[in-house]
Length: 115
Length: 112
Image (cartoon, rainbow over all chains, first blue to last red; front, top):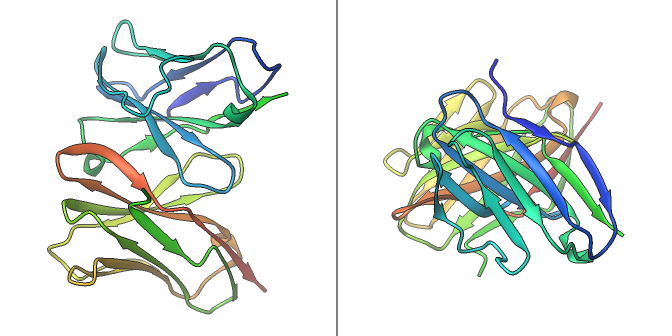
């Protein structure tokens, strides 16, 4: 079964440092999403890509977060500088076409701890 | 603004019993309502989904009941098993947007 690959699985970083997460979606999936899940809460969308273009980044804290999907395949999410409140699970998901009703597949996530 | 409210926060059910999780939404433009199951250390996985043109959808032991007028939907897990112990999230999307809006989750524990 095809999977969304994410790395690293766990990351511990000091406050004010830079951190980056990588996601490789299911082959052929044009739409890629980054979600943040704070412990005990549901995931919240940070950014959505259609191919290499950003279609929704309204909830992305752009002063410290950036995301790219240069060739429309894999994607990187960066935080610089990291803050204590950024501690969360960062989930990547992909779908064949835009719209949740085409079926999202989530990766296993990157657990970030900022100390 | 929380657009999808989920309850209860946690639930303990005996093996073989029925687990019921409820969600309510505010945005009448939502037109797709999935439920996700999440095990510790894993990403959410789609369990079952419904559109507002039907009032119920069943897949195996899992059933979604949908009440459009009340803007509520619920997940019923029949014959609950210890392997069903996980966190369950309701979600909604639609209204021209593509993103999923998730509820706050229900931690289900099925005891022997």
